[in-house]
Image (cartoon, rainbow, N blue to C red; front, side, top):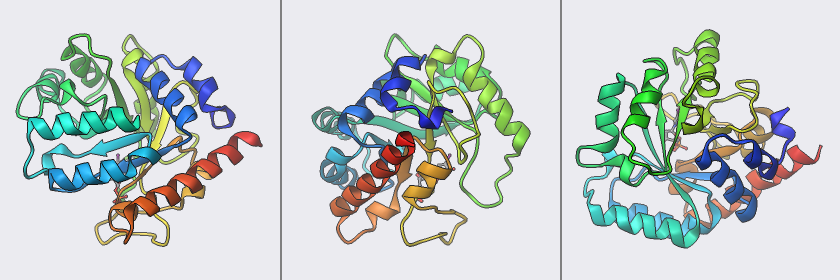
Length: 262
Ligand code: 5IU
C-alpha cells in the first residue's frame, strides 16, 4: 500500500518532476505541513511565510483575495520560498474548458504559471482541463493537483466522480504534469508516485460556521492517508502562529513516521 512507503521511495516512483521534487523536499526537511496562507494583505502573507517557512513543505495561496497584489509581492514570496525551501501552490481550482483555463493560468493580472510551482484544478470538465493547463506552459517545471474529494459538508462528489478523477490523474499522456490528488481518504488512489493533499485539519475544532469539517493531524495522516496536510486558520488565528506551525509540523511528522514504521 502506498501509505506504508516512505516519501524517499515514492519520489523515485513519481512521474511528475514536481512530485519528485516535493517528496524529496519533504523527506529532507522532515515536514509534511502545508500552510494555507489565506490572508488578504500581502505583508501579512509574507510575514507568515517568514515565520512558518522553516516548518512547511508547501505554501498555498488564494491570490485573488490579496487586496494589494503586486509583482513585488510575488518576487518576495519567491525569495522566501527559496530561502526557507518550500514550494508554492496557487489553489486556483480551475474548472473551465481547456482554452479558458490556459488563459486563466498564464495571463491576466496574476500570471499564475509564471510563479506558482503547483496549482489545483477540478476534474469536472474532463481531462481537457489538464491538457489546457499544460498548453499554457513554456518549459517551466510545473504541476497540478486534481480534486477528487472535498472537505466541505454536503459536497456533490460521489464515488464515481472520485474514481474518474483518479483515472484522469493516473492514465493518459499528461500524467507527468499531475503531481497529486486532493482528497480525504487513503483508498482514493493507489499509485504511490502521486501525493495526497488533504485539507480540513485543525486541533481542538470539528467544524467552522461555513461547512468546513476538521480532523486531527494524526487522523488525516494515519487514517485518511494524507501525505501533506493543509492547515490554515489553525495556524493563522493562533495566538502564536509560529509556535502553532511547529506544533502541527511535529504532530504531522510523528504521525507519518509511525505510519511508515508499521
Ligand atoms: N480547501 C479546503 N477543503 C477542500 C479543498 C480546499 O479546505 O476540500 I479542495 C482549502 C480552503 C482553504 C484551506 O484554503 O484549504 C483550509 O483552510 P482552513 O484550515 O482555514 O479551514
